Amino acid sequence: MGVSETPGVRVRIAPSPTGFAHLGTASTSLYNVLFARANSGVFVLRVDDTDIQRNRDEYEKVIYEALHWLGLDWDEGPDKGGDHGPYRQSERLDIYKQHANRLLEAKNAYPCYCTAEELDAERKQAQLEKRAYVYSRRCLDNPPAGRTEFALRFHVPGGKVRFNDMVRGEVSFDSGLFGDFIIVKSDGYPTYNFASPIDDATMAITHVIRGEEHLPNTPYQLLVVDALGYQRPQAFAHMPLILAPDGGKLSKRKHPEANLVLYRDQGYLPEAMLNYLALLGWNPGTEREIFSLDELVEAFSFDRVQHGGARFDRRKLDWINGEYIRALDDDELLARLKPTLTELDEATLRRAVPALKTRMRTLAEARPMLEYLWTEPAPPQLADIDKERLKPAAVALSLVQGWDAMPIHDVLAQVAESAGLKPNDVFMPIRLAVTGKRISPPIGDTLALLPKEVAMARITRAME
Ligand code: GLU
Image (cartoon, rainbow, N blue to C red):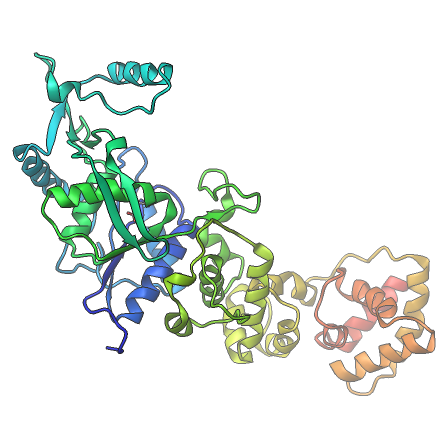
């Protein structure tokens, strides 16, 4: 244990399996992992699956897959077991029932028989009177007779609820404004604000690190913890929400780019993704932007976490990803590219790797850049002026000794200079003639990766 470590740290994430794995789940997991590792603590994965309308088993697997891809592994969870299980809320219904009974007996909770229509009417009345709505406590004071269907409400004692937030410092809420809230619905299922603090307490969670949208839930959860006589978590940290580029919440429904697995499929490196996600809500206080996971564990602290939402910036992610790609050694990059470029023999791919590295922001960009090596491109529609520029270039290329990137590049640069042109005025028509595209590896490599006669035939064809 390091000198400044907090002993016995247990943290958790509690994703709901209601769709694809969200970037927010990755970012919350990352911050939990950073804190757990810095304190030699335990990271728990709990599945919040009591929303029976929206949960599906396969979504749980999707979350596992995404977190495994990022290397954010957990110590306890539904698939791993542990001493504080079960780790799925749907398997803990008896636990919630026992706790609900305890609250009922202690008169910290009471049955509420009000119908949805009655509650609606109460709400509308409050609106008319321009006051914030809180439940009338009709069923506490004067429950209607003869009804059988009921929910359970928590009897809010009133007073301030204070807690320590590692990002925001001391936070205080006036529970007098809450109204008695439902803890068990009429279908017998617990609400989130009831189940979650029971899980945290019975799983001995010491620090709750989660998204900012849960900040207003925390005082409700603490009221439940206090009424049950459990020890509160030592601290909370409410982390900034990830916002879409337009400033709105990055939501599962509206933003397909919130899907974590998309980034894997588009060729982002997991280590770059973690680096980017860390910087999305936190800054190290220096200009430094590239951090490995171990370096993040070392550098991260909650006091440098920003308070407002964090806008997702794809350009910055691309830049970081490009930096990680360039930092890979050639063998490693080769290994990562091979599965997606099965058309190429290994020797050609190996020759392409150093050139690709200089241009790539994502692994997925390799494929369109190299496609010309196994697919004959359609003859390009060159302007007459470009065709003119191909002629001296073709002659010079035919004379190149040794079909290698460097002499090819130098010969073409020479052709441009002799004609008083910029290098690209000659490189671009050649690139178009040979690859059919405007983006390819540097020109010398682009040509050298093809057999000379194939490259020359494509240039000749483009001049026709
Ligand atoms: N199931 C909740 C969510 O996914 C968990 C929030 C929490 O960490 O308490 O937002």
